[in-house]
Image (tube, rainbow, N blue to C red):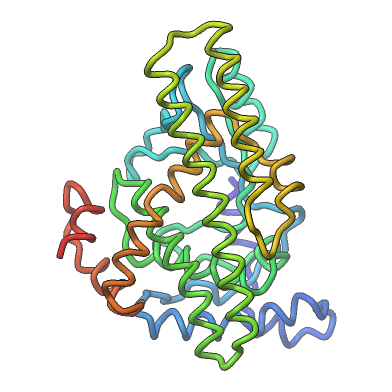
Length: 312
């Protein structure tokens, strides 16, 4: 089992840092982790024993996740799990198993998006380790990912995966900027802000395309005509992305490689659809991330957590 393999491979970060054989790039990233944990606790997140250990792991991912949509939809069909409720994705430690799952879904007519995951949370049930794929990211992304996963370890509302992922994404992003601001590293904070603004511009373009595709499916039945219109819409979306004023990424290269099938658009919606609304709330709170997290922790299993969080 992949989870047990991961847990058995854990080593205390202190021991890894004390080992002279630890590569310099691993050492540099691991030295950052206790600082991120301390910052997370100051924000009000529950770190407990999270990210106090390290796991060597080959490749660019721990898990390969699969998202699937039914024909003519851009909403995840989802997978049901007893303890977590319905999730929009299903993760596999074994990449070949993920591939077989995807092939089986495609054979049944589903649209599928596979994506690699460098980190995930067991929601505080276990002490999750820092993984080698996490450390291959840029430092700012590492800060964001750890904060994102600690949001999950702090609060997780069963059956509300879109809310859980989107609010964790927002807090991870904003928290990564604040981390560098509080660390008296204004240049890194500025760079992080630019990266986040670029990511949000791209997400907005993808969400616009997702809405266009959804409207197309609602107005026209399956067939070659609809497929042609969708291809035209996709080309228009890629053109808009090529014209985005990005400061940290090449928009032409990005437009060429972005996956924009229905299932990948559904995944974008899971993580990014509500970021603008969180930004508005964040502004009302005068950019106080501690207050936002306290507000989040105060939710008591509402039927509509987004509405409850945004309510005055």
